[in-house]
Amino acid sequence: MTPVRLAILLAALLSAAPSFAFDNEPSGFRGVDWGTPLGAVRGKVKLVFNRAIEADIAEYRSQADLRVAGVPLLFNFYRFYRGRLSEGIMFTDFSQRANLEQVLTARFGTPQDKAGRQVVWAGKTTIVVLTCGSWEKACSATFQSVALAEEVSKNRAATAKSSKDF
Image 1 (tube, rainbow, N blue to C red):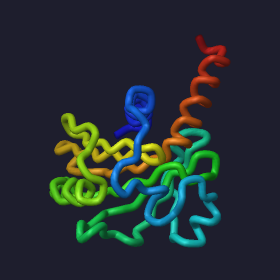
Image 2 (cartoon, rainbow, N blue to C red):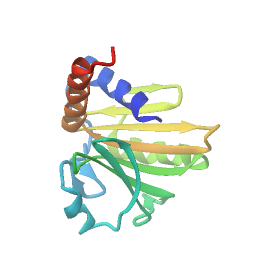
Image 3 (cartoon, rainbow, N blue to C red):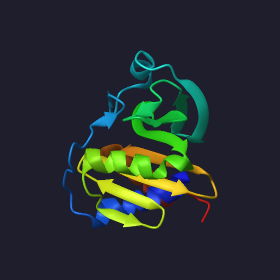
Image 4 (cartoon, helix red, strand yellow):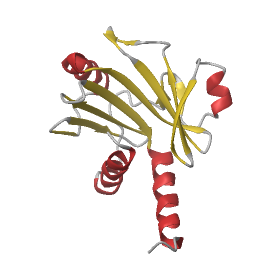
């Protein structure tokens, strides 16, 4: 899922869905709390720079801890907004789709939304979106900080309003 599509989905969820916690709602990704500075995360996880998503968002990948409840993962991605952990992504092969969905449902309960290729658990602190595409032959479970997603959205809106490009 592209960052723009995810941002649109998250904005819709944040504005339309009532705010409530789901079962076992995480406060971060893979044991690292949302907002933790990049340097502190590097002290816990071996990270390799992957790409700059946007000017304020950098993505790092890790090949550590490549299982979640027995489901094999290809990578864990850690995204940092202005140097703070804002998203985490578990990336696996499409063949693991049913297994990963089953693990997430067992952990977080019934999803709030399940349409097409996406399954969503939306909480007060974290939004989890499982996205699988057969043409991509991949699945990703994206965990995102609600507070930092709101901050990103506000900053994008402010930038758009002040842009001279229109």
